[in-house]
Length: 321
View 1: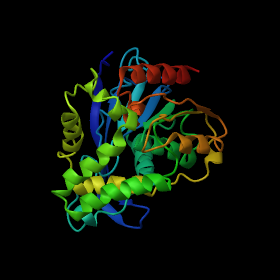
View 2: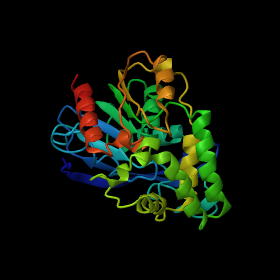
View 3: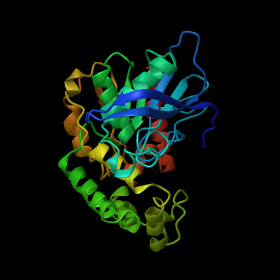
View 4: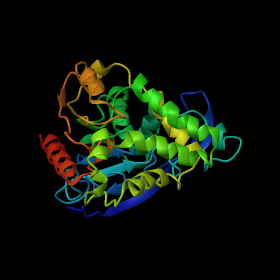
Protein backbone atom coordinates (compact mmCIF):
# COMPACT_ATOMS: atom_id res chain seq x y z
CA UNK A 1 0.00 0.00 0.00
CA UNK A 2 1.40 3.38 -1.02
CA UNK A 3 1.20 5.97 1.78
CA UNK A 4 -0.93 9.09 1.43
CA UNK A 5 1.08 12.12 2.43
CA UNK A 6 0.05 15.56 3.61
CA UNK A 7 2.97 17.91 4.14
CA UNK A 8 1.82 20.50 6.65
CA UNK A 9 5.03 22.54 6.38
CA UNK A 10 8.53 22.46 4.95
CA UNK A 11 10.99 24.80 6.58
CA UNK A 12 14.55 25.66 7.47
CA UNK A 13 15.78 26.44 10.96
CA UNK A 14 18.85 28.67 11.12
CA UNK A 15 21.01 29.63 14.08
CA UNK A 16 23.43 32.56 13.96
CA UNK A 17 26.30 30.54 15.36
CA UNK A 18 26.82 26.82 15.90
CA UNK A 19 29.88 25.19 17.46
CA UNK A 20 30.53 21.67 16.18
CA UNK A 21 32.12 19.02 18.38
CA UNK A 22 35.28 19.42 16.31
CA UNK A 23 35.65 22.88 17.88
CA UNK A 24 34.85 24.79 14.67
CA UNK A 25 32.14 27.46 14.89
CA UNK A 26 30.11 28.28 11.79
CA UNK A 27 27.82 31.29 11.29
CA UNK A 28 24.31 30.85 9.93
CA UNK A 29 23.95 27.08 10.25
CA UNK A 30 20.72 25.60 8.88
CA UNK A 31 18.77 22.39 9.39
CA UNK A 32 15.88 21.69 7.02
CA UNK A 33 12.77 19.89 8.21
CA UNK A 34 9.17 19.05 7.35
CA UNK A 35 6.05 18.28 9.33
CA UNK A 36 3.30 15.81 8.43
CA UNK A 37 -0.05 15.93 10.26
CA UNK A 38 -0.99 18.22 13.12
CA UNK A 39 -0.02 18.76 16.76
CA UNK A 40 -2.88 18.04 19.17
CA UNK A 41 -4.07 20.41 21.87
CA UNK A 42 -2.11 18.58 24.56
CA UNK A 43 1.08 18.74 22.40
CA UNK A 44 1.55 15.05 23.12
CA UNK A 45 1.42 13.42 19.68
CA UNK A 46 4.70 14.52 18.06
CA UNK A 47 7.05 11.91 16.57
CA UNK A 48 10.55 12.73 15.30
CA UNK A 49 12.09 10.87 12.33
CA UNK A 50 15.70 11.97 11.67
CA UNK A 51 16.99 11.58 8.12
CA UNK A 52 19.41 8.93 6.92
CA UNK A 53 22.21 8.89 4.32
CA UNK A 54 21.74 11.57 1.63
CA UNK A 55 17.95 11.65 2.12
CA UNK A 56 15.66 14.66 2.36
CA UNK A 57 12.47 15.04 4.41
CA UNK A 58 10.72 12.31 2.39
CA UNK A 59 12.99 9.61 3.84
CA UNK A 60 10.14 8.04 5.83
CA UNK A 61 7.40 8.05 3.21
CA UNK A 62 7.25 4.27 3.62
CA UNK A 63 5.94 4.68 7.19
CA UNK A 64 3.82 7.81 6.76
CA UNK A 65 0.12 8.20 6.14
CA UNK A 66 -3.32 7.09 7.34
CA UNK A 67 -3.24 3.48 8.47
CA UNK A 68 0.57 3.38 8.47
CA UNK A 69 2.73 3.13 11.61
CA UNK A 70 3.28 6.91 11.51
CA UNK A 71 -0.39 7.69 10.98
CA UNK A 72 -0.60 11.36 10.04
CA UNK A 73 -4.23 11.52 11.20
CA UNK A 74 -3.01 10.70 14.73
CA UNK A 75 0.51 12.10 14.94
CA UNK A 76 2.51 15.14 14.02
CA UNK A 77 5.57 13.62 12.36
CA UNK A 78 8.66 15.82 12.10
CA UNK A 79 11.38 14.77 9.70
CA UNK A 80 14.76 16.48 9.98
CA UNK A 81 17.47 16.59 7.35
CA UNK A 82 20.92 15.91 8.73
CA UNK A 83 23.97 18.06 8.03
CA UNK A 84 25.74 17.47 4.68
CA UNK A 85 22.74 16.16 2.79
CA UNK A 86 22.86 19.18 0.50
CA UNK A 87 19.77 20.94 1.89
CA UNK A 88 20.79 21.51 5.48
CA UNK A 89 24.22 23.12 5.96
CA UNK A 90 26.65 21.09 3.86
CA UNK A 91 30.05 21.21 2.20
CA UNK A 92 28.30 21.98 -1.11
CA UNK A 93 26.25 24.97 0.06
CA UNK A 94 28.45 26.62 2.70
CA UNK A 95 30.50 29.60 1.50
CA UNK A 96 34.22 29.99 1.98
CA UNK A 97 36.20 29.60 4.08
CA UNK A 98 34.19 26.43 4.93
CA UNK A 99 33.19 25.25 1.46
CA UNK A 100 33.79 21.73 0.18
CA UNK A 101 36.42 19.74 2.03
CA UNK A 102 36.95 22.64 4.43
CA UNK A 103 33.51 22.05 5.96
CA UNK A 104 33.97 21.01 9.61
CA UNK A 105 33.77 17.39 10.69
CA UNK A 106 30.22 16.56 11.79
CA UNK A 107 29.10 14.06 14.43
CA UNK A 108 25.77 12.41 15.10
CA UNK A 109 25.72 14.42 18.35
CA UNK A 110 26.01 17.64 16.34
CA UNK A 111 22.92 16.65 14.37
CA UNK A 112 20.99 15.74 17.51
CA UNK A 113 21.91 18.97 19.28
CA UNK A 114 20.81 21.07 16.30
CA UNK A 115 17.56 19.12 15.98
CA UNK A 116 16.92 19.63 19.70
CA UNK A 117 17.20 23.39 19.15
CA UNK A 118 14.84 23.13 16.19
CA UNK A 119 12.17 21.27 18.15
CA UNK A 120 12.37 23.37 21.31
CA UNK A 121 13.08 26.85 19.90
CA UNK A 122 11.26 26.81 16.56
CA UNK A 123 8.45 24.28 17.06
CA UNK A 124 7.94 24.68 20.81
CA UNK A 125 8.04 20.93 21.42
CA UNK A 126 9.73 19.79 24.63
CA UNK A 127 8.68 16.13 24.51
CA UNK A 128 7.87 13.61 21.78
CA UNK A 129 5.87 10.43 21.68
CA UNK A 130 8.72 8.62 19.93
CA UNK A 131 11.84 8.95 17.83
CA UNK A 132 11.93 6.59 14.85
CA UNK A 133 15.14 6.17 12.87
CA UNK A 134 16.48 4.09 9.99
CA UNK A 135 20.26 3.68 9.44
CA UNK A 136 21.94 7.01 10.29
CA UNK A 137 18.53 8.12 11.55
CA UNK A 138 18.69 5.16 13.92
CA UNK A 139 22.08 6.30 15.15
CA UNK A 140 20.50 9.67 15.89
CA UNK A 141 17.59 7.99 17.71
CA UNK A 142 20.03 6.15 19.97
CA UNK A 143 21.95 9.38 20.60
CA UNK A 144 18.75 11.25 21.51
CA UNK A 145 18.02 8.57 24.12
CA UNK A 146 21.46 9.11 25.68
CA UNK A 147 21.87 12.88 25.26
CA UNK A 148 18.27 13.80 26.14
CA UNK A 149 17.02 10.76 28.08
CA UNK A 150 13.60 12.19 28.96
CA UNK A 151 12.77 13.85 25.64
CA UNK A 152 11.13 10.82 24.00
CA UNK A 153 8.79 8.23 25.48
CA UNK A 154 10.32 5.49 23.33
CA UNK A 155 12.59 4.96 20.34
CA UNK A 156 12.51 2.75 17.27
CA UNK A 157 15.71 1.82 15.41
CA UNK A 158 15.77 -0.13 12.14
CA UNK A 159 18.85 -1.35 10.25
CA UNK A 160 21.30 0.61 12.36
CA UNK A 161 23.65 0.43 15.34
CA UNK A 162 24.70 2.54 18.29
CA UNK A 163 28.35 2.41 17.25
CA UNK A 164 30.25 1.96 13.99
CA UNK A 165 32.23 -1.27 14.30
CA UNK A 166 35.45 -2.20 12.43
CA UNK A 167 33.74 -4.27 9.69
CA UNK A 168 31.62 -1.25 8.68
CA UNK A 169 34.65 1.04 8.91
CA UNK A 170 36.37 -1.19 6.32
CA UNK A 171 33.37 -0.82 3.98
CA UNK A 172 33.21 2.94 4.45
CA UNK A 173 36.95 3.40 3.96
CA UNK A 174 36.74 1.54 0.63
CA UNK A 175 33.93 3.79 -0.55
CA UNK A 176 35.68 6.91 0.75
CA UNK A 177 38.89 5.98 -1.06
CA UNK A 178 37.00 5.91 -4.36
CA UNK A 179 35.46 9.34 -3.83
CA UNK A 180 38.57 11.00 -2.44
CA UNK A 181 40.73 9.79 -5.33
CA UNK A 182 38.64 11.67 -7.90
CA UNK A 183 35.48 13.58 -7.00
CA UNK A 184 34.05 13.16 -10.52
CA UNK A 185 35.12 9.78 -11.91
CA UNK A 186 35.35 8.50 -8.37
CA UNK A 187 31.56 8.66 -8.09
CA UNK A 188 31.23 5.69 -10.47
CA UNK A 189 33.83 3.73 -8.51
CA UNK A 190 32.03 4.61 -5.29
CA UNK A 191 28.69 3.37 -6.65
CA UNK A 192 30.24 0.08 -7.70
CA UNK A 193 31.72 -0.46 -4.23
CA UNK A 194 28.42 0.54 -2.61
CA UNK A 195 26.41 -1.90 -4.74
CA UNK A 196 28.33 -4.84 -3.31
CA UNK A 197 27.20 -3.96 0.21
CA UNK A 198 23.74 -2.54 -0.31
CA UNK A 199 21.89 -5.79 -0.97
CA UNK A 200 22.64 -9.26 0.39
CA UNK A 201 24.56 -11.97 -1.44
CA UNK A 202 21.35 -13.98 -1.73
CA UNK A 203 19.52 -11.00 -3.25
CA UNK A 204 22.01 -11.04 -6.09
CA UNK A 205 22.20 -14.83 -6.42
CA UNK A 206 18.43 -15.27 -6.53
CA UNK A 207 18.12 -12.38 -9.00
CA UNK A 208 15.66 -10.50 -6.82
CA UNK A 209 16.32 -7.44 -8.97
CA UNK A 210 13.69 -9.02 -11.26
CA UNK A 211 10.98 -8.59 -8.61
CA UNK A 212 8.03 -6.25 -9.02
CA UNK A 213 9.69 -3.89 -6.55
CA UNK A 214 13.11 -3.65 -8.22
CA UNK A 215 11.81 -4.00 -11.82
CA UNK A 216 15.19 -4.93 -13.24
CA UNK A 217 15.54 -6.85 -16.50
CA UNK A 218 19.16 -7.97 -16.20
CA UNK A 219 22.10 -8.06 -13.84
CA UNK A 220 23.78 -5.28 -15.81
CA UNK A 221 20.73 -3.04 -15.49
CA UNK A 222 20.41 -3.74 -11.78
CA UNK A 223 24.06 -2.90 -11.15
CA UNK A 224 23.92 0.24 -13.27
CA UNK A 225 20.83 1.45 -11.42
CA UNK A 226 22.66 1.32 -8.07
CA UNK A 227 25.89 2.77 -9.46
CA UNK A 228 24.18 5.68 -11.22
CA UNK A 229 21.81 6.52 -8.35
CA UNK A 230 24.51 8.61 -6.66
CA UNK A 231 25.37 10.78 -9.67
CA UNK A 232 23.01 13.54 -8.47
CA UNK A 233 24.87 14.03 -5.18
CA UNK A 234 27.88 16.14 -4.31
CA UNK A 235 30.94 14.04 -3.50
CA UNK A 236 32.01 16.19 -0.54
CA UNK A 237 28.53 15.97 0.98
CA UNK A 238 28.71 12.18 0.75
CA UNK A 239 32.20 12.09 2.22
CA UNK A 240 31.06 14.21 5.16
CA UNK A 241 28.08 11.98 5.95
CA UNK A 242 30.12 8.78 5.65
CA UNK A 243 32.68 10.18 8.08
CA UNK A 244 29.84 11.13 10.45
CA UNK A 245 28.68 7.51 10.26
CA UNK A 246 32.18 6.07 10.59
CA UNK A 247 33.08 7.92 13.79
CA UNK A 248 29.83 7.43 15.65
CA UNK A 249 29.75 5.93 19.14
CA UNK A 250 26.64 6.68 21.22
CA UNK A 251 28.37 5.98 24.52
CA UNK A 252 26.82 4.12 27.43
CA UNK A 253 23.79 2.15 26.22
CA UNK A 254 22.89 1.38 29.84
CA UNK A 255 21.95 5.05 30.20
CA UNK A 256 18.92 4.60 27.93
CA UNK A 257 15.82 4.78 30.15
CA UNK A 258 13.00 4.39 27.64
CA UNK A 259 11.65 1.32 25.80
CA UNK A 260 13.53 0.57 22.58
CA UNK A 261 12.29 -1.39 19.58
CA UNK A 262 15.48 -2.53 17.83
CA UNK A 263 14.93 -4.05 14.37
CA UNK A 264 18.11 -5.24 12.62
CA UNK A 265 17.97 -6.95 9.21
CA UNK A 266 19.20 -10.53 9.15
CA UNK A 267 21.07 -9.95 5.85
CA UNK A 268 22.28 -6.35 6.40
CA UNK A 269 25.96 -5.94 5.46
CA UNK A 270 26.19 -2.31 6.65
CA UNK A 271 24.81 -2.99 10.12
CA UNK A 272 25.21 -6.75 10.74
CA UNK A 273 22.66 -8.37 13.01
CA UNK A 274 25.47 -9.61 15.25
CA UNK A 275 26.23 -6.00 16.18
CA UNK A 276 22.59 -5.45 17.19
CA UNK A 277 22.49 -8.64 19.26
CA UNK A 278 25.68 -7.57 21.02
CA UNK A 279 24.33 -4.08 21.77
CA UNK A 280 20.90 -5.30 22.88
CA UNK A 281 22.37 -6.98 25.95
CA UNK A 282 23.35 -3.54 27.30
CA UNK A 283 20.04 -1.73 26.64
CA UNK A 284 17.78 -2.02 29.71
CA UNK A 285 14.33 -1.97 28.05
CA UNK A 286 14.94 -3.36 24.58
CA UNK A 287 12.78 -5.50 22.32
CA UNK A 288 14.92 -7.06 19.59
CA UNK A 289 12.82 -7.93 16.53
CA UNK A 290 14.86 -9.06 13.50
CA UNK A 291 13.62 -8.27 10.01
CA UNK A 292 14.05 -11.62 8.24
CA UNK A 293 14.72 -10.60 4.67
CA UNK A 294 17.07 -11.23 1.74
CA UNK A 295 16.96 -7.57 0.71
CA UNK A 296 19.92 -6.54 2.85
CA UNK A 297 20.11 -3.02 4.24
CA UNK A 298 17.10 -1.59 2.30
CA UNK A 299 14.83 -4.08 4.08
CA UNK A 300 15.09 -1.78 7.09
CA UNK A 301 13.21 0.86 5.08
CA UNK A 302 10.60 -1.49 3.66
CA UNK A 303 12.20 -1.99 0.24
CA UNK A 304 10.19 -5.17 -0.34
CA UNK A 305 6.39 -5.26 0.22
CA UNK A 306 6.69 -8.05 2.80
CA UNK A 307 9.30 -6.07 4.74
CA UNK A 308 7.18 -2.93 4.51
CA UNK A 309 4.12 -4.66 5.94
CA UNK A 310 6.18 -6.27 8.73
CA UNK A 311 7.76 -2.95 9.74
CA UNK A 312 4.46 -1.08 9.78
CA UNK A 313 2.83 -3.76 11.93
CA UNK A 314 5.70 -4.04 14.42
CA UNK A 315 6.32 -0.30 14.76
CA UNK A 316 2.61 0.47 14.91
CA UNK A 317 2.10 -1.99 17.77
CA UNK A 318 5.09 -0.63 19.65
CA UNK A 319 3.91 2.97 19.35
CA UNK A 320 0.43 2.01 20.58
CA UNK A 321 1.64 0.19 23.69
